[in-house]
Image 1 (spheres, rainbow, N blue to C red):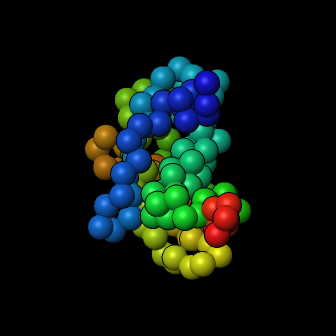
Image 2: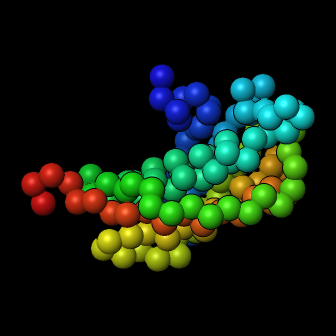
Length: 125
């Protein structure tokens, strides 16, 4: 089982502005107080930013996480859904920079995260 499957991340899809994805929450995502673990949110952002960069590359390159910086702004119980809304700030040959807003079902901002992906060319290119 992959981390994507374990975290229950669904449907990373490109939009005109960037990308959107969903994570269905459960007990697995909770820290001892029953809130979503901050590391879960960081993993959600890094995974989905990488998936979005890979979708943009259409197999010509692959993204690997280089840097992540997050700010957790509001608590969220480990139930319901979280959504990642990513905006591509920089699309270079060597890296992509994403700003990801993690929001809840009411569109309230839970965390704001920046992910930098290193771009690795596919074999044979």
